[in-house]
Image (cartoon, one colour):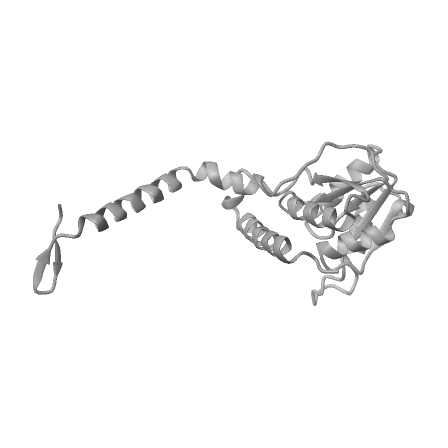
Length: 214
């Protein structure tokens, strides 16, 4: 047993403290060695990707780098719905005008082959909670099913919010954008992945505890 010097005398560490320290080090070593198991789990736990069915509308949530629009356009072309809804307020970036993200998203969808007449824009939306509220208010009565598209890491919270707002009035199919820059099996290898996962878990906790309000 190593000795620890303490100013004027020498003493042996208490056995209880040694055992606690040893156990802690073992736990840390095990967690570190298993990071390739539990870190991917944190990524995959955020992802919801429901089986596809035909619906009345595809909701492409605002944000992202174009993966959402590419997925939404593909689903439209494959005949899963006759309408595409885009969301998002102005980006509030000095170098960009006040064009809402919903308009940027719609313009990209048009470039991808979605007819302008098939697109409904919701430029007032400032959050996923607004996306759900405004979508419910804007859709014609009688709609039975919608498809909601977002980045993979954003799908679990989106599902929670939309289900809470729609309250079984409309069936929701959650679709993770694919292909996507986000890789749940290696998210911690990129700064953008770390930011996305960390932010989503904080927002999930906030949504679960506070909801979206009225």
